[in-house]
Structures are given as C-alpha cells and as structure tokens.
Image (cartoon, rainbow, N blue to C red; front, side, top):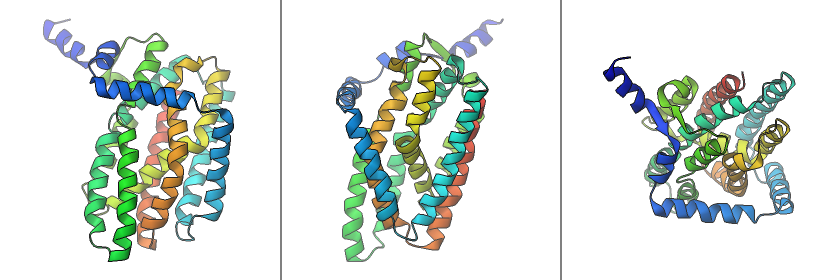
Length: 285
C-alpha cells in the first residue's frame, strides 16, 4: 500500500474516543445532565406520556392535518413489519446494530444544522401572516428553537454506544450507507427550495417514529442480547421525542392549513420513509 493511499485511508477513519473528547465542555456537560434527567423518568411516566400522545392524535389533530398523521402512521407500520421480519430471520444482531448506530451518528450530526436552517426559513415565512396568526406562530417558532437546541450533541450518544460495544473506530467512506447520505442531501436540498415547508415531513416522521415505535426496536435489541447500556442513543431519543410529540401536533395543526402544504409534507414523508427503511434493511441484512 502506498504512503499516499495509507494517508487517505487514515483520514477516512473516525477515532471514536478522539471525536468524543474533542467536543466542547459545554456540550458534554449538557449531555451528562440530560442523561441524568432522562434516567430519573419512570416507566409509569413514559406510559402516561404515550397514552396522552395517542389521545392527542385522536382528539387534537385538525381534520386537514389528519391527512398527514394518518399517512405517516401507515408508513411507520411498515417499519415495524420489516423489523419483525428481520427478527424472525435472526438478523437483529450485534453487527447490524453497530451499522445502525453508525448511520444514527451520521444523520443526527446534521440535525442541528437542518433544524436551524428550517427555523430561519419559518421565521421569514411567518412574516407574511396576519397579526393574530403571527402572534400564535411566534410562540411556536420559539418552541421549535428550544426543541432544536435540545438536539445539539446527540450524535455523541451514538458514539458512546459504539464504544460500549467495543468499537474504537470506523471508516467514514465505507461504513456510511448511501441511503444515509441521501437522507441528509435530500433534506438540505429541500431547505434550499421554495417548497421548504415540506421539511416538516422529516421532523414529524422522525420524532413520531421515536416517540411511538422506538420502544419496539429497543425490545428487539434486548431480545437479541444487546446490553441496555449500549442503547442510550435510541432510549434517550425515545424519551425526548415523546415529550416533543405534543409540540409536533401543535406545529402540524398550525402549518398544515391547506391541501397544497399537506401534499408537500406527505411527499417528503415518502422520501424520508423510503430512505430510513433502506437504512434498516441494509443494517440488519
């Protein structure tokens, strides 16, 4: 192997310990406090929150916004069916989970950038509202910004889980799936278009997926012998997104106020669902 090739290969390797230790102290402290708070939440509280979310879906979603939630939940059922099939085939494995976590690291590392860009666009978009709608919209935008700030640094949870599974490094070029790269590329592209409101499809899909169905993934991982301490990324997002899901319903009701916007959101849900399903299919293959 030539020296030049070795250098290129080394640059493609991500050293997990170095990546974690290079993060700023403020972010690391935030994650520590966040984990402490999450671990204090009881199972009873999580069950209560999920019950409230299910009730809110039935009673609080506007008729036009139901065209989004109904469509999204149908898609999510396909994810559970796929994972159940993978379980029956004996393909929920350590190696599959490692691949999945690497995709989680990659995608979640872009979350703050995506959400901040979307928040800026929404803030500009809201200036076209009348006074009453602008007042209501401003409160929702502040809520979105608060939720976005909570996502900062969450990719570290995925790296810490990989460490607990004995992984010290991985190859960024080889181990990141095309589907993961496309997921980020499509969303960045959408935020550069006049149809940026469709990005809500990404937000709703990912947060509802974690809030409603990640507990099923956690169950499958436990049954496969994956230690609980190596499931922090999924569990923490489950807890956090369960608390955000009520906000998502408010946002959906507010912004999905026309058939045209519903179409844009559902079109992006199609894109996100297809790529996420592709990630799972490749990881647990």
